[in-house]
Structure formats: C-alpha cells, structure tokens
Amino acid sequence: MKVDAAVNEYVRRGAEVAGVHGGLLEVLTSSYRELDVQLPIRCESGELLLCRGYRVQHNGARGPYKGGIRYHPSVNLPEMRAMASLMTWKSALVDVPFGGAKGGVAVDPDVLTEWDLQQITRKFAQHIHHVLGPYRDIPAPDVNTNAQTMAWFMDAYSDINGYTPAVVTGKPVSLGGAPGREQATGWGVVDVLAAYFEHHGDDVAGKRVAIQGFGNVGSWAAEKLGRIGATVVAVSDVYGGIHCADGLNIEALSRDVKEGASVGEVSQGELITNNELLGLTCDVVIPAALGEAITEKNVGRISAELVVEAANFPVTPEADAVLKDRGIPVIPDILANAGGVAGSYFEWTQNIQQFTWSEDRFGKELCARLNTATRTTLRRAEDAAVTMREAAFAIGVERVAEATRLRGYV
Ligand code: NAD
Image (cartoon, rainbow, N blue to C red; front, side, top):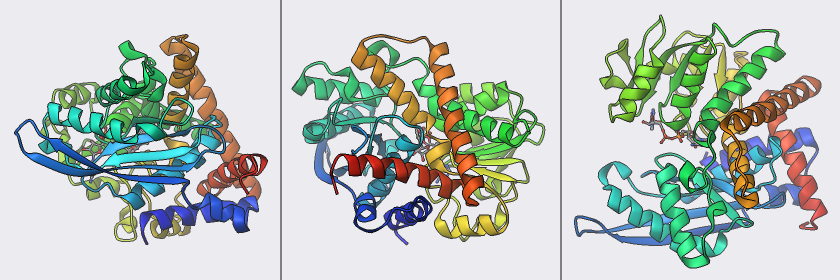
C-alpha cells in the first residue's frame, strides 16, 4: 500500500469512530493543493543539478497550512501528501489554529555543499512563495533541514514580499525564532510519554528506552529522558546504533554527534544494527527517524512494552494491526510528535505579535498543551474502546470536519 493510501486508512478508522462519512470524508482524505516544481541548481562545483520540490497543502479549514520541509533522496509526492494529511490531524488534536501541509526536495544533502543547499533553499522558496505567507502556509524544519535552512528560506521569501519572519518557524533565535522551538518536538515526545504513564498511575522515571534516530527529535527526546530519570539504553542513526544496558551518556553523545561523528563512531556501549535496536527488550521503543521503520517484516521483533511514534508514520497499518493483537500500545505520531507544531504555533504567535516569551514559558505552555491532548486522547480511547491512534484521529477528524462544515466547504 502506498504511504498516502496507508495514512488515509488511519484517517478512515478515526472518521468511523467520529461518525464522519460520505462527501465530507472524501474532502478530508484528499489534498487541497499539490505543487511539484522543477529546481535547476548550478552547484558550487559548476555542475547542473536538477531536482524536484514539492509542497502539499492538505486542509486549511482551521487556519493557515503548516508543515515541515525535508531534504531526502526518497522525497516524492505521495509521501508529501501523506505527511501533509498527518499535519492536519496533529494540529487539530493539539488544538492549534493551523491546517496541514508538507514539503520537500528530492535531493541527497550529504553529497552537497552548504552553498549548494542555500541555492536549493532559495530557489525552492522563490518557486513556491505565491502559495506561502504567515496567513497562508508556514513551513518549518524537518528531516535534514534546520534553523539555517529556515533563515535562508525566510530571507528568499522576504526578498520578494518584504521582511516576513512569520512565514517560517524553527528559525534561529536571533532572527525571530523562539527559544525552545529547536527542542520542542523531542521534549514534547517526553511530555506526552510522562502524561501517558501518569494517566496509568506510573512514572516515566526509571523506564528503559531505545531511540531509533539521533537527529533533532531523537537527541532532544534523549536529553529530556535522561534529565527526568529515565535510562536511554540505545540510540542509532542511519549508519547503525549503540547499546549499553546501564544507560548511555547522552550529554557526551550529543556533543560528539554535533561535532560531526556518527552514533557508531562514539566510543560508548556495543554496536548494534537499527533492526536490533527495534528488537531490544526495554520498556519503550521510540522510532524517531524516517517513516515505515516498523513494517509487517520486522514487527515480530518488537519486544518493548510501548511504542512511541516520534517520527511521522513509522508504523505501517499492517504492523499496527500486529502490535494491537500482541497488546503492545502505540502512542501515535499525531500525538507523540505534536510538540513540533505546538512549538511552531508559539513561535508564530510571537512573530505576529512582535512579543517574545522566555524559554521557561515556552516549555511550560508546551507541556500543558501536550498534557491536555494526551489525556483527551486516552479518555476517548477508553470511552470508545479503541486504540490511542483511532482515538487521536477521531478527535482530529471531528474538529476539522466541524470547521470544514462551518466554513461551508461542503
Ligand atoms: P533529522 O534529520 O534531524 O534526524 C534524522 C535522524 O534519523 C538522523 O539521526 C538520521 O541519521 C536518522 N536516520 C535517517 N534515516 C535512517 C534510517 N533509515 N534508519 C535509521 N535512522 C535513520 O530529522 P528530525 O527533524 O529529527 O526528524 C525525525 C522524524 O521526526 C521525521 O520522521 C520527522 O518527520 C519527524 N518530525 C520532526 C519534527 C521536527 O520538528 N524536526 C516535528 C515532527 C515530526
């Protein structure tokens, strides 16, 4: 099943719980607008690089489209369509006034220079700027993009439209970014996890956790887990992972990775593969890398007691059904990584009000919002006797369906 059809499978199950059917459901399971643009770049080497850029706007009933931009060779239109849809339900679930979007460029950033990446970012912004804006569509960082990418993007947009910091979130703090936004997705994963355990009369402190992916999301989740007394026993990146039953030293690991080391080059624990990491016996496994990490092929390996989807769409519907049968709960992506869009909302509000918050306020508001969304999801799952994913999608679909109806779209 293609990724966009698979995400729609999740949407349909949520819609069933929410009682949303017919033409309205058809609107909610297709995108509003899909851009596919040609990006010819003259690289620093003098070579011509021709790549494609995509921006999909899924549903804007509740507010401007919102979603990240990723740079990866596997980026394609169905994937962007699926990710844009997830953003719609995520924004609704944490009750921020955004719709859903996603974008990306099909390119391998590992083989490009900083100068090449800047040219790609500027050209992409120039080619899609007409559908963007603080009240239209607001990009953010995602896989292989970061605050620097957002600074270039904002600058290219501002060249055409005048200075507009609110057109992107995840900017450097010195350019209107919010202290806390860089950490928001990873920290938010842990806020959701803490609320989950609290709801069950348990505590995240003392839990043993394995994390696949040690980029923005995985590394900040690991940092907060360590700070609140959980033990991170394994982490990985695209090249493989490391495992230490007594717990890894996350501070030292983050420092080495920031300086350019891969996880496996850091002298801690024993080397493991990504598949071995997913199969470790521990309390929580957190896929925080790319989509479709857990499929029907490797789901049998999962030995953790809880799966937390920090990445977008890391568990396919086939694997999800197996986890359900085995009684392994899954905290779904639209809840688990919603700290990113909530943090982006805080940055956007500060930009449009030209008023800055402290990092402390940012962290407290983030935690409160995610706590509410987690409790609401858990209560709905219990009341309707459905999984957390079905409950989360049901809440998202209900809220978007109501806005869609009220605005007279259908
Ligand atoms: P990133 O580029 O900062 O890090 C990605 C990490 O995953 C890196 O450590 C990379 O080496 C690793 N990785 C890549 N391919 C892999 C593979 N095949 N196997 C194992 N590891 C692999 O990206 P990020 O911003 O941390 O995003 C990670 C996930 O979280 C993505 O699914 C993204 O859509 C999702 N997400 C990110 C944000 C955000 O604010 N950055 C918000 C919500 C969701």
